[in-house]
Length: 227
Ligand SMILES: C[S@@+](CC[C@H](N)C(=O)[O-])C[C@H]1O[C@@H](n2cnc3c(N)ncnc32)[C@H](O)[C@@H]1O
Image 1: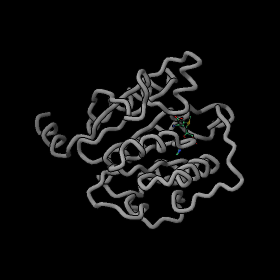
Image 2 (image 1 turned 180 degrees about the vertical axis):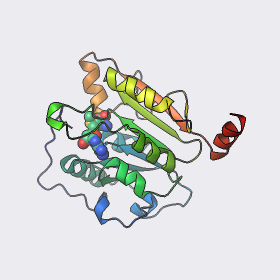
Image 3 (image 1 turned 90 degrees about the vertical axis):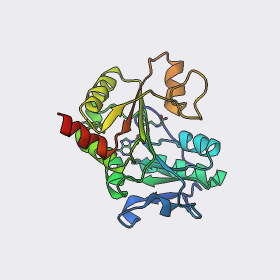
């Protein structure tokens, strides 16, 4: 995460709440991560869950939705999985792995919403080997996994990254601009209500949000016919 530190409990235990992508069978149907799942329950995915605050808060307010966090850093993944386990959240899980790889492992059209709050604005010199996550290959993975009409929401404090995200989204005909709606767990005046938003608001940073929805493939076919 870079700009924050986490102190994971010595007895932290992901037991049944945290999974590693490497240990999951492909294709990875996100419903299989849950114990008893009504087959029609929608699945929403949060990318870069950090300490898991969004998963903890949102899964309590929306018990009929299944939430799957994705977190690359082991120590944050363990911290978040342990929080979910201690709270006994039946409808939230977290997968350790790279977000693009996790999305690529999920079945097409299996996700009813994607949340991405404060993606790391790399590259910094120390992390120059890592690339910004919101790139064409990543957006292709998002488009594939989202169901028709499902939203993808992004929030950031980084003005340069925000411009780049806007341009990257505008270049995708399958992702149609929509009004940004904060999640249920955001407080009045917040866009995401995540740890990073609360920290950055105290610092007076400007926070920006973008939202798109996945078009139906028939819409693309129609647009192509009319072009
Ligand atoms: C700045 S933190 C934001 C945490 C949380 N969303 C919030 O708003 O408080 C970004 C998180 O994304 C994770 N991350 C960065 N790149 C990732 C990737 N490729 N796949 C999965 N997680 C990633 C980082 O490890 C970090 O925990």
